Image (cartoon, rainbow over all chains, first blue to last red; front, side, top):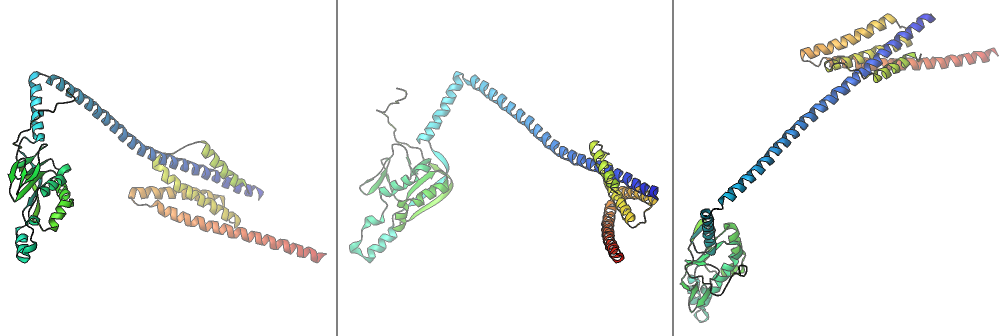
Length: 246
Length: 128
């Protein structure tokens, strides 16, 4: 009986041992499996990074070669002929900026007119208190509108007169003069620039609000393309000298 | 009595010492096999407590269960079915039922012992 009992426990012990061993082998295998999966994932990412790095190197290389090419081209360009061509280009660019050429681009057109219907009504209604000056466009109206456009317009003209550095808008008797030439209504202010911004500039200005309040016929239209005339007057610089060159 | 537990611990220790792995393809079969082995062991403990232990039954059951569980998992892989789940569920249920039986047996034994002791004391007193 004792012998049998010992045998029993021995068998169980042996099987327990085997089970324990198998258990640990299974655990080890699963751990290895998980680890290898993780490594595979990491490896894919590392490969991706490495390929991107080589790509980056290639691109940097191509940048430096392109820069070298540009330098050689530039150094080759310094021949007399091409030099004068560049000067010509620069000159024509400056002429455009100075307003000496006809220019075109997107922008807005502001159209102003004397308030004739309002004047007629006021006159019929109350002739004694009728002030005709209140119903016409003055030089200051144009001046302030041009000022409102100021920062954001690249080029401005009133009717056929281009506004340049020496331009002036003034009142002479009963007419408005721009660049010393007489204007007659309707007045058409054209400005090149981003149409939305220009329109916002004008509508936000006090002058525009004032004109609207007086029911003057003022109209703003956005245009895809408008053409402004060249400045035809003289730009004489008799006294001014370049301080830097001097 | 403590020998089987010692055996289990020794097995775990030795298994841990040798970081021995089997091919990954067979990992699942081994895992299912371990579950079957545990079930057989618990069954044997239960049999011990209920005095119906038989070494032949244990050894044959141990290996047959392991092989069947592994074979089921293998067949499932071949058929594209998660057939090893059947083995896992069946063995899991048996594990719990065996454990429950062992617990009840142990409690009963404890109870009987207590009762016997009490009876002995009563007898002793009566004799005195």
